Image (cartoon, each protein chain N blue to C red):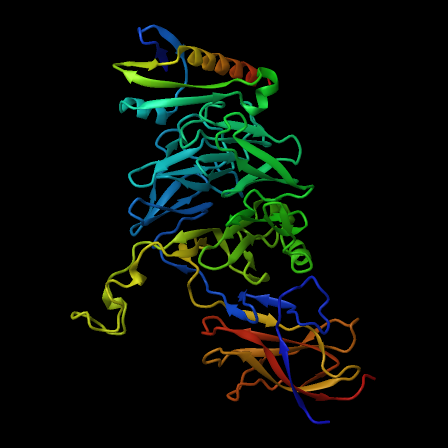
Amino acid sequence: MPAKKVPVEFGEWRPDVALLDTKFASEVENVFAGVNSYLPFPSLLPFAPTALPDACGLYSARTLSGEWKIYGGTPTKLWTWSLAGWVDISRTTGGDYHVQEGDLWMFEQSGQKLVAVNVNDDVQVIDIDSGTHFAALAGSPPRATNVKQIGDFLFLSGLATGGGYTNRTIQWSAINDITGWIVGTNLSDMQEFGDGGPVQGVAGGEIGYILQDRAIRTMQFLPGDTTFIFSFSRVLDDRGCISKYGFDSIANVLYFISEDGFYSMTGQQVMPIGADKVNEWFLANSDVERRNVVHCIAGVNKPRIVWAYHTNTAAPMYDKQIIFDWSNARWSKSSISAHVWALLGSGTPNLDLDTEGPEPGDFLLDSTAKSLDSFAYVGGRPLIGAINQDGFLSALNGPNLPATMETAEVHLSPGMRSFVSDAYPLDDTRADDTGTVAAGTRERLQDAYVWEPPVMIEITGSAALYSSSRLMRFRRFIPAAKVWTHAQGVQIEAQQDGIVA
Amino acid sequence: MMIFDRDGNELADIPLSERNQAVLDHDGEIVIIYHTPQMLRSTLGERNGTFTLRKTGDHIVAADVVSLRAYADLQRAIKVARETN
């Protein structure tokens, strides 16, 4: 029987479904999910000369002139980043801060003020343009785990118990006044939710969301109503957000991690975005003891939601990310260790033209370097950032990470064994002199998989596998720092090879 | 902050936010809107109202004495209710 060429796609990564003869990928690593392919995942590229060890907070706030300032937090200090390194801008009275191990600083910009909270310290505030040190926010607001500006109000949630507050209470500020925390004055008020468990946080925009660990409520401002101010409606019962940092929203769509996986919510409509896709896989591959600190970051430069998490109790910091692309409803994952993640704005650009073009100098400004009025020089471009495992401020724009993609399991010749002589990767990796393809084989579904040694891509663009089995899957490996744009699958050359004895 | 009537008589000592004080210090006028907190409505009943404050010399002066006193009473009741709970 003549050999035939069979394309085997990687397909959508859905590890929760049966993967025999499907179009789904069984494994992907360090890639983004495209609509019909996988895309490279960049590494974290450090750009700060000094480290911020044990970082547990990261945020960028915008000044009046439109520039971005980056703030960081450690268990005992608050910092701001400058070209010379991190500058201590902690409070000058009250001593060190006391962030609990595993907790994060949470930040929120409110006008020209930046508010920082952790449940063990008084709410802190600094003027973004002129402040030199954080200080306690006026008005004696309660200590809180989370802070969120919604409309004209600043919300505090995950409150410390005591002083009339419990962890089921939220409080919001006076209208347009983050120093006004007198309950019953200028629309400042508090609300306790008797059921649904502790409040994890508040999210949203025009539609606000209250996330409890066993319920989700929507919150609607009632303009002109000085009696109720906000109306609250429970829209999800018995399910909520299990992590105090595990939620975020984009355009009134809430994304959160629940006890049984990932969900999105628009108003009152709930979508189980992880069901039959990645929920079971995630629950089996994440540290159950630290699911309460899974951290959600909603990017604005790409349609992606990232949840950073710990894989096991031994992981000293966030070591994995699971990513949902809300434009195509596909998932992927990556492995980067980092202390804390955040959405950052790029800082002041480097205007030294010596480094912008291929030429050593550009005295006449007539080289191929970007012109001085190029949009590339405009500060404040959004990017995903982190404090990497070594403590350095980094941006997710480094060389591509090593990528792995696996196809589903296929019967190439139903009921028979197949001999695969050749695998031709359907991707555009440049200078792929170290990339490989490997075949995973077994004769019966009841057998364990055996991965054969990876085979290098030859000058023909194919890998000579010479593998024979009844059930097969294929793994493509693209080494780190290789340049590529799309990977769709492998085309294999196969022929019938007899029956199983 | 102590609030006075137009004749300079003390009316009530009420808390003002830092921002409100800053507005008053810059010769501005502030409007205080008050209401019974949602969680205490069953205990304290529904009360709400508004009054205006402005600074005259060193004194913060209320234009509506009745509303100011009602607010001060409500704040005292809120304090007691929260301490009791």
